[in-house]
Length: 251
Image 1 (cartoon, one colour):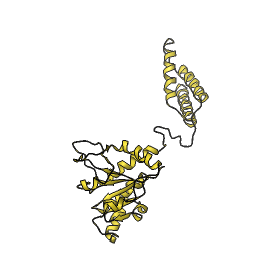
Image 2: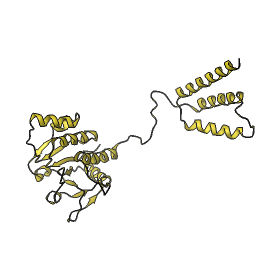
Image 3: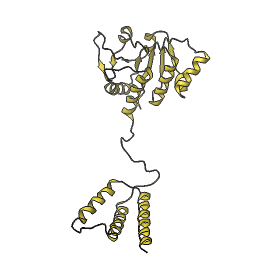
């Protein structure tokens, strides 16, 4: 993966939100956290430190390596491109992007060797104009316009999720085989021939004219099942049990 963006929390108020932000970052492969003028003095006292650590659920490395800055210009001095997250349009002319549009832009810049950062404002008020004017572009997360309020860590998670997903190679849809292997066509056909024979013996096909279409329907259903070799063997066992039960009942 490309070098991830730096996450910058401007004047965060609650140590729990800092901890939850670290957790969101660890979830999504973001690693560098910078704090600008946090409300609680740093380093934290023992009680605040424990509250923050509990909220992070084990993302201790990010908290341990977090950098503290007195001002926002100091926090972004070494960065080449800055995104400001905000739900407001403000009165300034800005480049406004959704997270999905911003992430390819970040990846391209990171690929060119640029160091980028994403700014997040206070929990209650967000970023103000004096913060936003220092950014190159704004990120606005499309949400329900009737209720678009996000927790600070939720906002970080949404950005981080888009960043991680854009570079993740996990298949969108797959079957976990659990140590087995997919059944071969021969496995299917052998089972289907046996199924057809048992259905014939049981008098399932009451109409010879309808039998071909009924067989195709059954075979199509089995093909869609995408069974493993073990599952085919299990169904052979089902047929064996059913046939044995029928013979016992007719004896």
